Image (tube, rainbow, N blue to C red; front, top):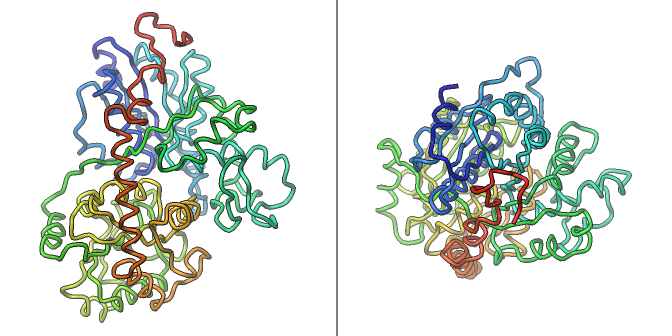
Length: 492
């Protein structure tokens, strides 16, 4: 417990513990949130890391991150899940089991940290509510996906009570009160079959959300005004009752280290024309089937547009095949990409095995488009880091990404989606060529680019001094001012 002792010795001030579940999509925004609590609020933060099942990429990210002095990483002891985890276990089930088994020590860790005024958790660490209730520590929830996702999650327990069959068999879209309707085919994977553990775990986590002292969501007012307004004003949400919801985004990586072995892609970008390169990245956990990988390769080739492709070994087993081992998998693109493709793209395409410095690529003026899996972090990075406006191609793979894709294409109007992609089938090379040309050279792409610029400006303003997200993070009333009393039950 040396790390705990080190954190305990820090100067006495407002002390917040932060507990994310494993995965880059959870670690990154919660770490950015922690940095801001330290640098702008003057808090001391203990960032609790679930080490069980941590990917190589997650470990390297935390080790390489430059942290303020009052932000300490505290690794939780690994849990033995070897007799619980199975190969065929769903992603959310595995994530929930690992998180649940890893917080057996949470009570003792929080006590050893000393005076902890609040704990912030993400959606899949809800077992912490029971631990903190015994310690009289208020718990705040951090929703890493969208506000629309949060509203749906708060509505799910009512759906579970009212709907007898499967949600995907409903004859009409799902109408979350006060929000835009969700097509049943866009529902997240975890609610498409109510008989499996994935659904039961998600329902459990969603049903615990009202226990939170407040909920932070990684979004901003201008991006998602409809669900944010609904959760504050609609009678259904008021009657739950819904905890205060604070949009504090966009909290994304602002900088990332670029190693010498990866800097060559930026050198390559420096030599390309303005807005000419399509960046293809399916997130930290996304994978394609063998057939789809080949079709995407041929579609890129047919489009004759420059591109950078973060390519991963294909698998027919799961679209989230590298979620738990990203950064640690063996990956030689030459062993699975068509040989003629690799030869034909010389000079116009760049293949990066497994990882790219996404922040640097998206902010580079030569990057003119982004083919994305529609993970919420990547979606916001595409909006905010593309200084010159980067339109997107939506390619949802798993979890809530179909909901995000619909949001990008239909509400924000900053992306196009290949025909057939949302249905889970194989998208052909001709369709891929068509949508690349539409985004990179068509009039629709120019309209999207202008729209992205507008959204970027609103996101930047939200986090500037006086902006909506700035005020919600940096005003102490959102995490109770306790320095003088030390009593976690005292509120403003």
